[in-house]
Length: 146
Image (cartoon, rainbow, N blue to C red; front, top):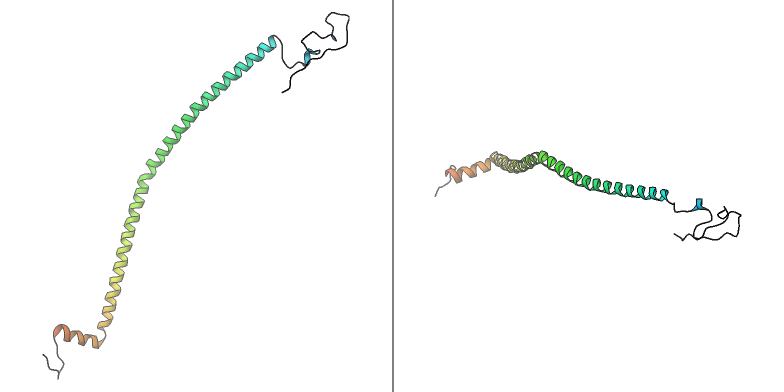
């Protein structure tokens, strides 16, 4: 901001402190001054002091509010954790159990497929003869057993 400069007016008046005669160190037009004088200045300083006090109170409240907000957020997050943890733990346990059951079902399906294939081999008469000779030591008529 710039400095306020005062100037002397060349107007003269018959009264010692007439409207046109400037007093040394004061502006020619007191209504245009930027700085209030006397009681008005005191009121302005009192308002500034009140504003400063109000600002300090507001900042103090904000600090308390921030602490309160953090505490509330922490409490809310602990509550959410306490409510969801058992459900999540149960879900993960059942998910592991489901994976084990799927592995068992896949193994059982492989065993079933193998048994069906073996059953189809027993429908072949040549396979049945070979098994009878091998397992039961059967001999066909005309064959010599050793």
